Length: 169
Image 1 (tube, one colour):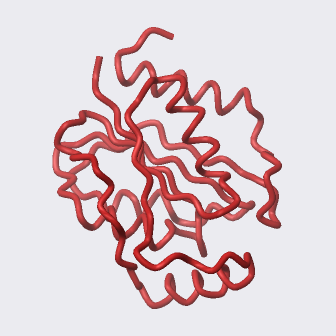
Image 2 (image 1 turned 135 degrees about the vertical axis):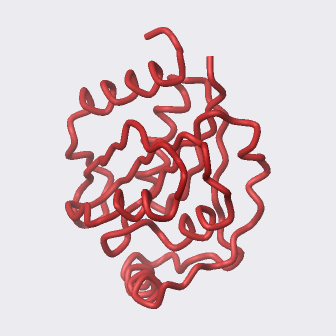
């Protein structure tokens, strides 16, 4: 079996955390959460506005160490919400801190109905990585907790990631 690390950034409503947790529980994978040195506002609309500015400016916030060395893993799952059609700036900070050459990356994105160009951005930022089993999970367009993507689709994707890691289904 291959060692799997799930690296997750999830804002306060926890949709990304929820799906990453489903994967973690199914795989028994190691998990690391990205936290920004300066937290985002608790208000949804303030965070949306700040996130838009950061994405448009290409800003990457300072993040705290995640406490896991990516060199110890064969597969790294990058779990991020989509902010303004791409990965959250905190995830971009992490992605830019790792040498992806020769690694296997599994992108997991949550969104409110606008998947954007995140998967292309992951491919561009994770140069040299093999991208496998990409998954987008749609939630309520108002940032709520209602998952629109059928749970059976998420479970099927989890099965694909288990197979990639050489785990029995």
